[in-house]
Length: 295
Ligand SMILES: [Zn+2]
Image 1 (cartoon, rainbow, N blue to C red):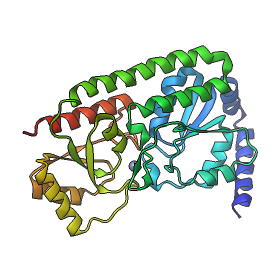
Image 2: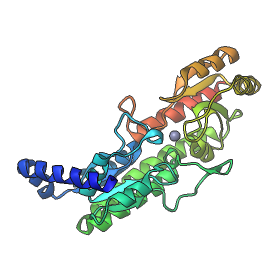
Image 3: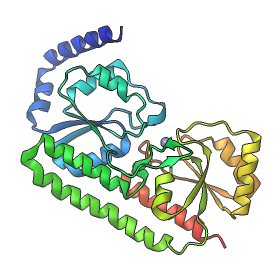
Image 4: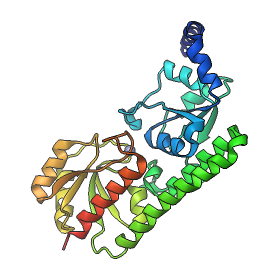
C-alpha cells in the first residue's frame, strides 16, 4: 500500500518536474549539494559549515517539534531528491527505519549526526538531546563536515575552514560558561521538558522536569507537590519553560513555590529567530542569572 502510493507520488513529481523544467534544472546546475536534515539545529550546523556550497532543508518543518513528527509520503519523496540526509539519531527520529525502508535505491546518503558522541542515559533511557551540549555539538559538526567533504571532495578545504571557525565559537561559549558556572553554589533548576541533561553534564548542573525525555508525562497532583517541595528546598526562583510545555502546570508550581516563569530554548524548533549559538547563549545566561541570584 505504502509502496504503491510512493510510486504514485513519484510519478506526480516527475510530471511536475517536466513542466517546471527550468527551475528544476537550475537546482541541479547550481552545483550545490542538496542536504535534507531532520530538524532545526542540524540545519543551523549544516549551513554554518556548508555555506554557499549547500542548499539545506529541514524535514520537520521549522514550527513543529521532532518528538511528535511522523513523515508522510511526500517527505519520503523529497528525501529521495536530496544528496545527503542528516538525522540526529539516539532515537530522536523514531521513524528512521521507515525512511530506510522507503527511500529504495535512491542516491541519498544517510548520515547519523550523533555517531561517536558520549551518549547520556537517564533512568536507563537514551537521552536524544545531544545538541544541547556545546561539547557534543562539536562532534555533531565534525560528522556533518565529514559527510560534506565525502560528497564534495573538491571543496574539502572550504568545509574544513568553516567547520574550524564554527567549532571555535562553540568551544569559546563553552569555555566562557565553564569559568563562571564553576563557582556556583546552587546548581539545581526546574524545566518543563527534560531536555537539558547534556547541558547539565557540560556544566555540572541538575535539572528537575515536569515532562520526561520525550516531552510526555502526566503531572499528577502528587508529582506537582513533589516539585514544589523540591523548588522550595533548593530555593529555586525560576521555572524554565520550553515552547510546548504545559503552562498550567508551570503556573501552579510558580504560584506555590513563589518562583517566576522564564522561557528556555530546546532548539527543537526555531524560536524568536535565534540561531543555535545565540539561543544557547540565551539559555546559559538565563540559567546562570537564576542560579547565581539564589542566596
Ligand atoms: Zn525534546
